Each structure stands twice: as structure tokens, then as C-alpha cells.
Image 1 (cartoon, rainbow, N blue to C red):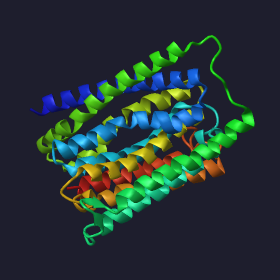
Image 2: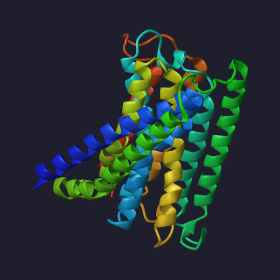
Image 3: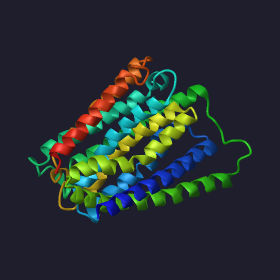
Length: 337
């Protein structure tokens, strides 16, 4: 029954939203107690934490459902959704546009997002024609993706370390015991378990919806599953904006994009029949290219830093990002498998 599938889907999304929010709050507490910078927490700790549903969904889609299109569609679709969230938090913010308030250093993370997404698009297009480019069942692109991801983290970390050195290191909060840090870590871990468990259910429900509605797995994975697994990013980004931490919100989204592309390589390790990008629909390349172009638009925004809003709603950067998102969704609906 279609109504039951949609009800279960909504319930899973709710669990991911609540658990993801609490997980991110616990991660923020860890940062406050330990003295880590909020920007670095947004880029690394929060981005990985909020991307756990994508990782769990990809594993479940491959191991349980044998649906590589769901796995790859979710990872790449989440990249597009994360950039769409930039539009959402800009609409919720007041005053100058988001790009005028965010630090220009985010261009480094976004630039690595362009590189990774573009490389995945290239790999999707050539993988079917060059099946021997692999090590065992793993495509050669997988170690390149993981290596580039690590280089991106190191590069951004060095940039952040120079920023911290300029403003001075923030020590452990006075009056806070190490036990408080242990409590925050435990809350973080418990919330993460719920996020992973809920994310593991998404592929089965998504495929049921696809069959009932007559939609392709590519479209469902890229749109519906990606939307559900992006709920934690929405929760933490809105929370960060509410407390006035623009850089933490943006860092979380761009860091999640880097990790989401790395998930494609992790999925490839799990998918034993062969390189996973040889088994998915070519239309996924459009999603990867859309993510790369959207990241490029964001880089222009962080560099040009527009202050005005069109019709007092959104900057031209936000309108461009929203238009690219709609274009990708339309392509996946028409040409997904």
C-alpha cells in the first residue's frame, strides 16, 4: 500500500531529523568543551556526523537491496541538496546576503568540491567503456577520490590553523570537567546509532515508493532519499544560523559535500560485482556536474560577496543555485533508470 510506504518514509525522516539534530548539538558541545574551533567542527566533525545517513543508506542499498543507483544517487544527490540548503539558510537570514557574511575561506572547500564532483562525473562517463581500469572489483577512481578527500581536509585544516593562530587558541572552558566531555561524546555516539539505523531503512522504503509510483530508482535515490538523508544538514545549519554562526553552517554543508563524494568510493569498496560506477545510470553524471557547477557558483559568491538581494528575497547566487537544482531534478525524472 502506497500510503503505508509514505508513512514509513516520513517516520524514518523524522527519526533522522531528531537524532541528527541531537547528534550535532552534542558535537557542538564537544567543540565548546575541548576548545576546538567552530569552523573546524563544522567542516570535519559535523559534516561527517550529518553525512552518516548517506553512508548507512549506501551500504544498505548495496548489501541488502543490490541497488547501486540508490546508493550513488543518494550520495551525489545529497551534494546538490546541501548546496540547495545554502539557499534555504540565506532566505532565513536577515540583513546582508549569506555570501557577504561568510568568510572567504569557504572557497577552498567549495573548490575541492568542484574537483571531486567533476572527477566523479568523468568516471561515470568513461567507466562502462573502460572496465579494466580497476584493482580487483574496485575502480581506479576510488583511491583517487579518497586521496583527494584527505588532501582537501589537510589543506582546509592548514588554512584553519593559520586562522586560529591569528586569533589565539581557546582553551578548555573554565569550570568544565573532563567528565562533561565524556558525557557529550556519549550523547554524540548514541545519536549517531539512531541516525545509522534509520538511514539503513531508507533504501527499502525508497524502492517500494519507486515501484508503487512508477518512478525510477535513480530519481528516487537522487531526490527523495537524498532529501531524507540531508535532514541532519538542514537541522544543524538552521541551528548554527540561529546562534549567529554563519561560518559553522556553511562549513558543515561544504564539508558534507566532500564526505558525500568520498562515500561513492566507499560504496565502490562494498559493491563486489565490479566498479560501481560501471553499473549505474549515466544520468548520475548530470547530478555530479550539477554539484560541480553549483559549487562553482558558490565560489563566485564567496569571492564576489554580493550584498543586495533580488526582490529582497535572495541574492543572484541563491537564485542560480535553486535553478540548477530544479534542472537536475527534471533530468533525473525524465532519464533516470
